[in-house]
Structures are given as C-alpha cells and as structure tokens.
Amino acid sequence: MGNYSNKFELSTAPKLKDFFITEGAEISDCQHALWRAKTKNYAATFYNTGKFLIQGADITDIVTKVENFLNISAQTVQEIREQHSFVKKIGVDESGKGDFFGPLVIAGVLVDENNYELFRKAGVKDCKMVDDKNINKLAALIKNNSIFSVVTISPAKYNELYAKLKNLNKLLAWGHARAIENILEKTDCSYALSDKFGDEKLIKNALLKKGRNIHLEQRCKAESDMAVAAASIVARAGFLSCISEISSKYGIEIPKGANARVIEAARQISSKYSKSELINTSKIHFKTFEQV
Image (cartoon, rainbow, N blue to C red; front, side, top):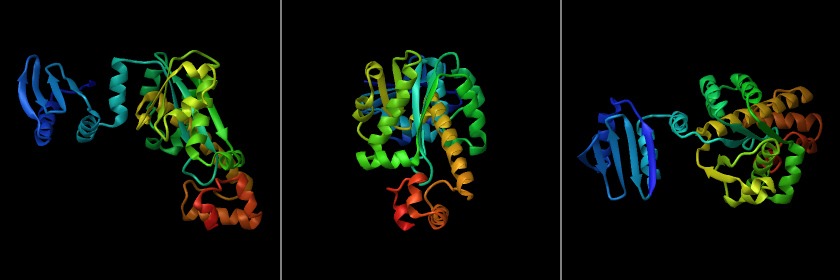
C-alpha cells in the first residue's frame, strides 16, 4: 500500500474537501480529523493537526492532482517531506543535453543534515526555476558546503561517445554513474537519487564496485528533491561556464538551446573555420547540424 503524507494550514481543508468531492470521493467524518474522503482506489484524511494523509494501492495520480490543485511547487512539497523524514543522499542531474552548443555536464551533490537547511534558506531549487544570473552564486555556495562531483563531457568527447553508444540515455547513465562513484570515493552514502530516464537498469549497470551497493532511486521530477536540485544548479553552472569559453574562443555569442539563433551561430563558425569545427563546439547528432 502506498502512503503520501504532508502538512497544510487548516484553512486548506475546505478547499481540499471540495476538490475530493469533484473527484467523486465519498466524504465522511473521522475521529481526530476534519474529514475523510474515500474512493475504491484510495482514502484521504485531513487531521485536526493539519496533517494530510493519502493511502491506497496506487496513489501516484491523485497525489499529483492534489499538489497541482493546491498550486504547491514540487520543491515546497519535497522540503516538507524531507524536514519530517530527512535522508542523507547523493543527488544527480545534468545540463546541456537539449543544447546544440556546449558540453553535457553531469553533477552529483551529497546533501545531509549539515547542509540541507543552509541550501533551503539560500533558495536552492531546480535550476530551471533559477535565473542564469544567479546560478553561479548558488553553485559556489553548494560547492563550498558539500561533497560534490562534476563530470563534463566536452562536445568532441560527447560526439565520440555518442558515435559508439548511439544512445543518449546510455551516455547520460555513464555520466550519472561516474558522478556517483566520484562522491563515493570521498565518503560513504547508501542512497542516490536521479531523474528518471530510459531503462532504470542503465545507471545501475554503469556503476562500478563502490556504487553497486548503493540504493539508487530514479524518480520523475526528481529535481523537486533538494539533493537533485543542488546537482542541477552545479551542472548548470558548469554548462554556462563552457558556453562562455566557446563564445570567447570563437568571438561570437553562443546561444543556448536549438533554435534559429543557434543555427545562425553555427553557420558563422562553419563559414569562418569549417563545418568539421562544429565537432568541437556542438552535438552533431542534432538535426541542427544537418540544417547548418
């Protein structure tokens, strides 16, 4: 049976009760609770203390609906969960996989009871929710207060590995595994978390001796977890630094993503040097390469 636990202000109870009514749940009284909502798939209880509990065989969909309905960011929800049951972990995330220019950067960050609160107060969250102008500041804070690892796969190396593997998920898994292993070389940890992509066995199979004993969880929207959020920021900072270096080297502003501005920049490099020079700046399996 699955369990979801959270804590809300009591003022949330009426709104949440109306939500479950629209979901077709049967509302009833419950001892020590404001109400209980029940369907054939789950039971949801809002206690007098503000504690909210969902139990059932498969609660993934209803939990997602509740969080979306209350407009609670996944980051806030995860903070509440971790404050109540903190687990030391290695978070892993990447940056650059959707960008034509630049490297693929994978970072791992160990978050424990010593740095969790510091990161929370500093505003560490999924890098997609942080302006690029603030990334470096947060990345420096994280690096100065954690054990971390950064695996940077340069465009040239990326193209070489992709030509061999023919699969981005295998390449991602290799990088994630290296980031985890690098941290385990410095300290012990029994739990690692990453975003879910491809076959879950990919990262596990890529782990070496030290990593084989770790409990590895791969979760959709794992960036809501503090450790993965911290890793996303460190990875993003590394990616942006490399983009800046490419811009300086070739004397043009290198845009992010894979859009019309990217194509124009690639054509400038191709025209000034050669198309083969894009191997050293870009991910050439992208359709953008053929457009250039």
